[in-house]
Length: 237
Image (tube, rainbow, N blue to C red):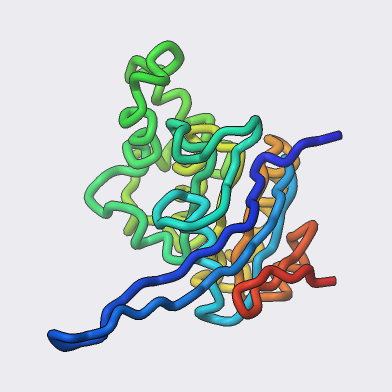
């Protein structure tokens, strides 16, 4: 039996704030309540729901960016916070905002290998090794090696998102979180990114958590779809 790459068990999350004034009261706003979800290798799981329902909050919990109650486990039985580099990477809604306009694309994609150079020194310790890996990643996301010498302003929206996906994949994560990854693109570019995610799943075994408002895109791409409603995931048929 295939084990999930991520197990989410009894996850709850609340935001804490304080009302204005010297005697402001502390307020607690529950966002997620008792979430349970498994994500399997090579599976694309859709996550839908109204704005503010907790979709991105769940993604931030998985990425270890905010605190939560419950467990998020990376199989085999390791807490995500204890793994470096983390087995989960993400791409966001606005690819242009994710790319430094002053740095060439090749360097942007290579950067995670440089940051984690102690871990990857055996395979990617030299500039030549990293350059060849960047070429491989560009090919994987449908771009040729000439893009290494371009900057973000020279790329279309769809090309920028391909670069962001490539940058996320260079550390070989088990799971990619795509948070509204096609909502800022035109229909044609968005469809191409959906097809790219599907192909990456097939060719690499990558699991994808696809967060979206677009139920049509989710139904086209995803194996299973969950809706967050009142802070609880509900399976959608």
